[in-house]
Structures are given as structure tokens and as C-alpha cells.
Length: 214
Image (cartoon, rainbow, N blue to C red; front, side, top):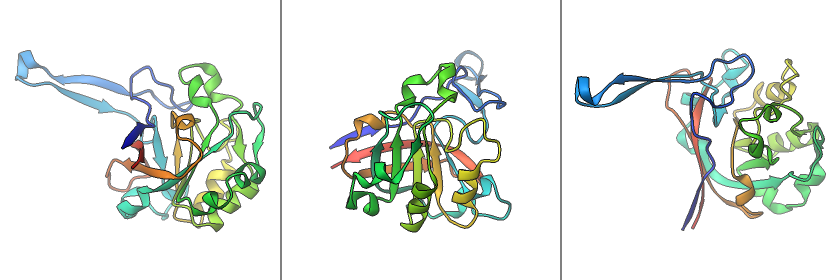
């Protein structure tokens, strides 16, 4: 059995989406005063390795707590895009390299190599994004979700969020951002667990993302 953690650790110094407050981890109870230790966690719902729900953009659409837990577990395939130049589109040519595995996967995870830039200003710039054809393929094949080792499915500079909107407007699917270690997952299908906090009316939530090989 092999298990790989694909999750960035939450710290007060971690990168966050521009304009978002960083997390706060405050000591709420101490061994000396209370006889136990407890920490007050304060962070936005789209902090760190996290999952977006359709309700992230559209009122009345599905929240994470409305999905069955089976939505967050399935067979995943990593699409290796690390050789693409900065700002290049991810096209169907890249996905077709994996043949029937791309069709069969419940989750398509795109390895851009951007997790190597975590904690630097370059993390927010120039990462490749999927094009319209890839997004249409994801929706046509009924994926449970897609994921990236970058800050967003859309460029940070594009405030219209066209990929988010096409993904979520009429489809019950999840989007995962800020993954890490996808380059260690190989080119075959594997089990993938992406379990969000079970929060009521959740537009998004941090997740623990794990790859598993039997």
C-alpha cells in the first residue's frame, strides 16, 4: 500500500488568493491556564488546498454539504503539463495522450509544477490554464471534479472567472486548487480522496487530499 499526501499545510505565512486575509492560528487555551491546549482557527473557506462548490459563484447552486460523500472519492488521473511554457493553454492534445484513462477517471488533476513556486510571488503568475475544449471534455465525461497545483483554474488577473462559471453554472462538479506533489502520482489511475470540512452551506472548504495505491 502506498499513500501520498497532496495537501499544503496551513500556516499563518502561507500564500492566499490576492485580497484574502491570511489564516490566524491563535492559542485559545493553554496547558498552564486551562490544563489543555486548544487553538482558534480563523481562515477563509478557500484557504490552502481547498475545494470550490458550484455555490461559490452562483446563488442557489449546490453547496459542498449537499453533495454525497461519494462525490469526493474516486479514481484520478494526473495530466502532466510541467513542460508547458508560462501562460500556455492546456489543450485536448495533452489529455489525449492518456487515452481511455482520461475518459475513465472520476477526477482529472493537472500537474503544472506550480507547487514548486509555493510561497513565492511567482506562484500567482503565468500558470497554464485549461482551454474550452478541455473544460467541455471534463463536463461531457461527467467528472466528479478537477484539480490543479496552482492558485486557481482561472488566471488571477481575469476577474470574470470564465472557467469557474462554465464549470459551475449548470453542473454538479467540484474544483480543487493548491494541490501539491502531483508529479509523484505517475501516469496511471489511482484512488483519490478529497474530503472537505463538513460545514453547512459551504461554498468551499479546505480539504485533505490523498492519493492511494493498493
